[in-house]
Image 1: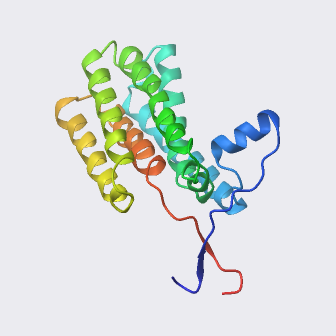
Image 2: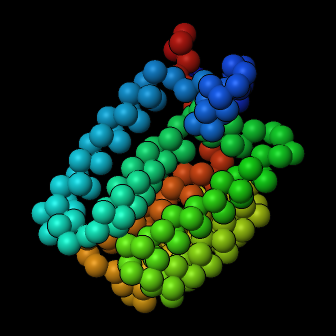
Length: 205
């Protein structure tokens, strides 16, 4: 163990009611620096995504419903990658509790809604794209979650790359939406499902 770093799995107490549920959803005990990086990263990447969609011309051809779905999906994926990569989220979603695995798999499964919205609304009813990505998501999640703990990171990377390659070669979408699959599988299979030690710098180092 490095002398300048420490691992902290201690989860701080959360308030009752909605505020506590929201804090637990995001990861209790998020540091100020984590919040700053998350906010700046979300703003910067969301602006890049919006600019890319606008300059590509695709945004001007979308209906209001399609624009809403793309905007919500983009914000959720960008913010979700950043949030799930924080120490706070790792501590909470990979805590030593019997319900933690179920919570992780339910979280992943809830994102089938994203696939349905993108495939059926934005991609004009592309059922093949929707169902294939749903199978990749659920199958990949099971493979990662039940892999030996010391192999979960490389297994997740392998499944992520496989899902991205399948999307690039066999599930083509307009170039302006090519960001969706990489961010979608990165958020769920790598950032959310891979357990990583919550590292902190020792204050006395």
